[in-house]
Image (cartoon, rainbow over all chains, first blue to last red; front, side, top):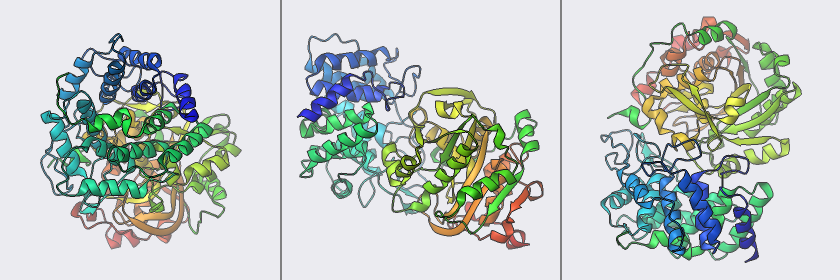
Length: 297
Length: 330
């Protein structure tokens, strides 16, 4: 499609990518761009993006959020997703990014567990992934880490399974989730689109014993609309596509989001997400979500 | 249970603050709070803000040609709960005041609970207002960052990574929504500056701060950003289970001042809370500014004339913040 090609051209022109046009490059937007470019057969550009991420990789395998900021290492999972996908599409590529060390870093990174309490309702003892070292586990870094493990064929790892248990525990009874709290002082909090979508991608293939996965997908279906902001819309559509529940005119919604984004600010982070969502259930995040097999790296 | 680890700090570290020079300077210079009643979002709030700033000692000539960052509260916007976030009309009115005084104005926020800033701006109706007013927005969660040493010393954190727009601003205007807060009692000017901390370094939520103690880090962030003043949206407020799930409370107030501690102590009294019992005000008292009523010059309306106790959730630690009726209205 013409607009998706145009979008990829814009991404290519902004490598390494930032969250905003005027901001610094970031590991997360560049990893998302690498995924989109590789899926769009822009092999050389995708490789260029991965090489930049590799240049940001620390000796322990982690990747910080932007140049000069080696910590926190939460973007490492996205770097793994991108590098694994790019390298799988181009076997001749030089593997500048050290996947093994990055995966080891992910597996050694643990959120702080806490004793159960009567203030928050979630199980604070489950160990998953934090945004920042020495803090609690939260939805998005956990979802991203599970997706990375799924992508490399380690969906059955104990860490991935405990991470999935943490996410299920943090789903709201009425469906969806937010950054990672459910009830505080007896009050049920509100769900948000982006963390719900990432959680659904991570949980693809998990049994829905309590029905909250189904309710969460219902929440996404109900709340997503053509006017939803680009990042939330893109993640939401990726999640629904992974479960075969994309709305009828989802591609039209994305094209509108693309036009809006370009008109206001062609921010590469948002463009990359739109490009990934436009791949539907064959996009790299949807494929990672559905990869529940366990194989060796 | 380690409440600090989840969201609430428990310990109080006072050592090292007494006698801090920047604090003494702030104390000496700024100790007035201006309260305007009968305010509406479609009313002349620009004039009210201007009057309030002048009444509390703001010197317009010193801001000409300088950079002003307006920092509203957009923690987790949703159209279902407009009482959660700073009203766009307040932000535009404040921007007009500073622009007319010759300053360059931008609006910036790092939403604490949501990563999708575009959605936060849309749900709060802020984007449309900024567009109409020709105001640029700084996404504080994702900017370049600079290290600033912790000038407070209440928490264990040696310093903070602040976004470029925060560090480069000549003046930061904390523009909170006046709300109850289920961890610390209430949130206004001082707690609002949590939104100057970038999520890309501290997470969503900014859990690093919670682990270091909320009251302590509120103090430390404010001490490390001494160039901040307050303009509070107290027109439609939030009571009950704030800062997210509370209900609307019509107050019709705009509160302004050049010392956030003095302003927050004043709004606590208006809400029916005893500011000397609020943990971060305890830390800030006589260090970042005055909490004692006798040290805060009242401009505009007196706080007693507009006081209307906010409902707070039935939790002993929060109920303990209530001013005794004799104290509140005597």
